[in-house]
Length: 108
Length: 337
Image 1 (tube, chains in turn orange, yellow):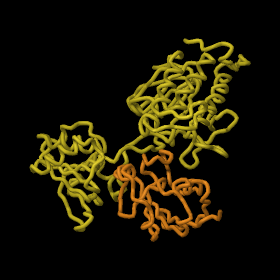
Image 2 (cartoon, each protein chain N blue to C red):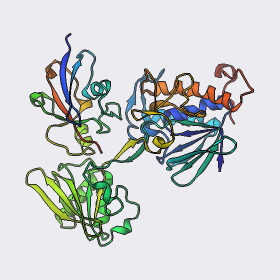
Image 3 (tube, rainbow over the protein chains, first blue to last red):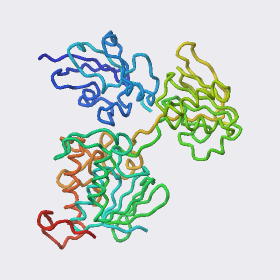
């Protein structure tokens, strides 16, 4: 299975182009952490801490499933939440995410 | 002064298990935690979530894991200082460490084990420019003295239980004016509180601003908070004159005072030697999520291993004249204190 490429814009505005395997069940929070990007993922990916809040800036947003109630609830503890806000831990990487662009949200 | 053999900073799973391993070697432990209960993240963030990677437990709820650990360490009668943050470490003339908490409680021991997880849980502060200038001058993240809001204009942000409960409390004859600002029109708080807020807002007893967020703070001539800028999802921004803003966005872990203890820190974690998980300060160890070393994995499982090896080294430090301290529970059982 081929890798996909996703683009992460950090809080300084620098873009990181990351190769991601899609056969590992990896999510965006895990990918960012593994790439030493400043995403805490405090709760370990259970949609419980809002520390992986990011904005989806590419058209992939339209193909993503609706946010779950848990994800919405946790976004209440994040700041500057927009319509394209997601928790990185809830974005499970698959081939349809090739070319995905996300921007890391500010943290409190 | 509380005297013990090992002061454990952090009462999460890793800190708790340290008590067991230390107890087998007849070392006594005292735990300090900023949270009011033992269990760390497991109790505070996800008590009802299952964990699947604890050996021999195909599935265990985080809260149950803590309960079992408390049962396991009970024979060794650990001491607890809860709801107090470990603030200062110093060494006395006899080479023992003194740890003082935010409340001034003093503890003394020859060994310190930092099992602080991701740090101390502190209120999440909105990344609003200039906010720090108003902390204690109109901006509070925790309500300590509700009386200070008497006759004041108060804005509360958030959609959880604490936000709604405090909004209801302050709107009930305490504050002159209460405004609840929330990013959407549904709330994760208890449905009963939500209904009360909606009813009160409809009756004019509280102002409810949904699909809104505070994005700016401004002070008056006295330097105290005077005005908030509120961004509305549809209608742009508005200004609101206030005396207090209470952002209630839950808790997040911060390294806190640990960062000032002269330990080598790398990426918000304490560097240790994997031989015995000792830091650069002899006698101070760091185990679990708070430490870092090549190949580090932040797993409860790994923290248990680190605690076990750390205690062996601590024993040798406390009793340099004794040797051969490995105890098999299968041979000796668990001899309670």
